[in-house]
Structure formats: structure tokens, C-alpha cells
Length: 323
Image (cartoon, rainbow, N blue to C red; front, top):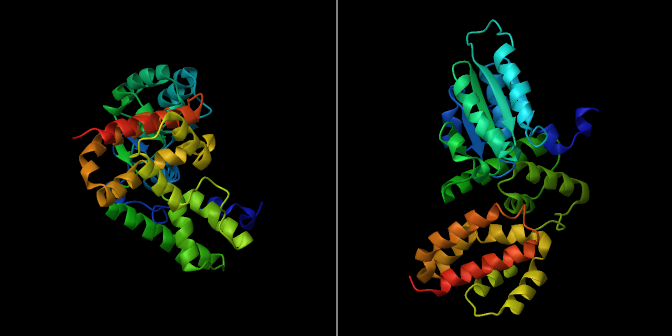
């Protein structure tokens, strides 16, 4: 298959350190390479996997490395056999460094037993192996590993970081990718695509390709209107019974969009409260805890609607009580 036949996001996957979009605090940290073990965590599509591969290739070109996708290689036997064998027996190359690398992608998929055993591996091979782990769900990594490995959060930590990242994505798509592809997308439409998919750069390119093929923004995904978002926020302050809440969720989200609702009750809800419900600001510590606690439960929830009902109920209990 020629490169022109590739999916746009695959064709433009970052291949070097200069191409990858990173927040300044992350880019600065790795200017001199990988000096310790790392857990890269945050939203999917933010460059965790690409950075891991780039770092190993940029700063350690001839260094042996092992890469495993933990969504497929989840058994503790993989740790005991493949990883252990690599760490022990892979012959060292004639390089300036004796360090080898093990890159474990989507690490949240491995078992707790795997993670427990992995703690001993880190200490056993600490003098000659560096481990890089990526995950979308840092809460699924046991504390014993997080205490041994430096964690790097790829999610924006402030409005300034969010603004910076959106601008960098826009420049990358508009000034480089579209120019190279000899294509154009109106500024308003491109900003809309970026905003809708932010911070997922991969998903942004999927929608960019769809727009170039159809001439319109794909509205078939899990996005909702601004009106529904505001209705949700106001709904949390109303005295509605169980039945009304159930119908509100079914009519506006349904079981397949509860993840969208959870996302709306995060940072966007905080921003809305600061502007519209100042009296609730001091209660946002508790609502943020609910989102942090329940986001990880969506994947295993028997019925997402029941999970959504529970979250709304907890938000109401928090917001109706005086500070």
C-alpha cells in the first residue's frame, strides 16, 4: 500500500520529536532523553504512544528495546517469560549506554497480579532497563507502581495549556498537513472539528479526512448541542423525581452517550458554575471527586443509564446542601 492510500492519521503519525505536539512542560522534560522509568497517562490521542517510540528512537537509536501492547499481552506469563527473557538475555549493542528499554502500551489492561509482580522487575533490572508505560486510566495503576515510577500527565492542567494545545493542533493541521495534502478547510469548520475532538489529535485527523471526503462535518458521533449541555447543568439544580431524571437521560443521552455526559460534568461544568452559579463553587471539590470516582466504572457498568442516574443523584445531593 502506498503512503497516499493510508488513513490520514496514520500517514501523519509523528515520526520525530519536532513533529509531535506536546505541552511545553512535557517537551522540556524530555529534551535530554529518558533518564528514569515513566508512566505516561491521560486522554487517548494525546501522543503518549508516539512520544514513547520517538524518545527511544531519537536518543537511543541502537539500544535494544521491547514493545508490548498490553491490551493483547495481559497474562503474567508474558512478564515472567518474554519480558524477563528480554531483560536478562538480550545481547547489549556497542553503544554509549548499557540501558535497554521496555515499552508497555495500554498498561491498564494487565491484571493486578501482573502489576504486583512488575514491582519486583523494576527493582531487579533498575540498573540496566528503563520501563515506559502508557495508560488512559491512571486510576487503574496500583499505588505500588506509581510510587516507583515517575508519572507524566498528558491532560491539560489549566486554561492556558488548553489554549496552547488547541493552537498547536490548528497550526499542525492547517499549516502543515493540509498544505502538504494540497487541501483546504475553512477556518471556522476546522476550529469546530478541533474543538469537538479535543484533545484527541488522532480523532481530529479522522474527522479532517471525513470533511475532505464529504465537504461537511460528521455529526454522527457522540456530540451534543450546547442547549442540551446547559439543560443538563440546570437540571442538576432542579427538584426532579426519579422518573423525570430517567426520561431526561434517555431523551438526551441514552446508554451510548453516558460517557459524553460524564465528560460534560468535568471541567466544562466547573467553568459554567464559576460563571453562573458562584454559590456552588466551593462544592465543586465534591462533584469533581464523583466524576473521578465514577468515570472508571463506566467500562464495567452493567447498565450505563443506571450509572448516569447515580451520578446525577450524587451531584444533586452535593449541590442542594449548603456549604
